[in-house]
Length: 173
Image 1 (cartoon, rainbow, N blue to C red):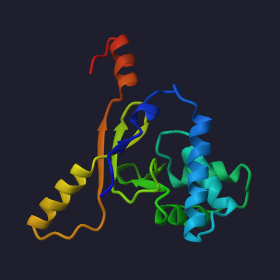
Image 2 (image 1 turned 45 degrees about the vertical axis):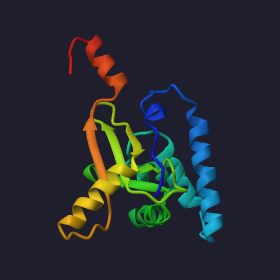
Image 3 (image 1 turned 30 degrees about the vertical axis):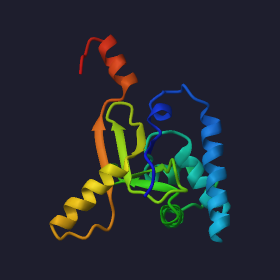
């Protein structure tokens, strides 16, 4: 069983952490995982992962394509989708289903379902993981005779900085 974790403190800090280090740590972890598994983290796959990690907001495939095309003019949708398929298969990114977008995985070394807190104001998405949530979903599914293939929990709301900003602007919750 995996341990609980979350990256909400850094995700919702709105610049209160060294994001360059955040990106480099994610890229180094990805390289290590790929090497260990005998998988190739090609320059293109690495660049797509880097583009995903450049912010904490989920990013869509066509946004990735536009960013990629700035340095690689011949980039086409299949190129991005193949890179995303690789990154998903190796647990390096998660797909936020409700947004049809992708975020970097905060703990790619652990196999886990996706649990996300998504700020509907700034767009940031924090990955959280509580094994008790996974267990509750699995237990209830088993009680109903349902076979779970994939678990993703997405919770929409407002992060603390956005709540504070809205309070200061007099908008309340």
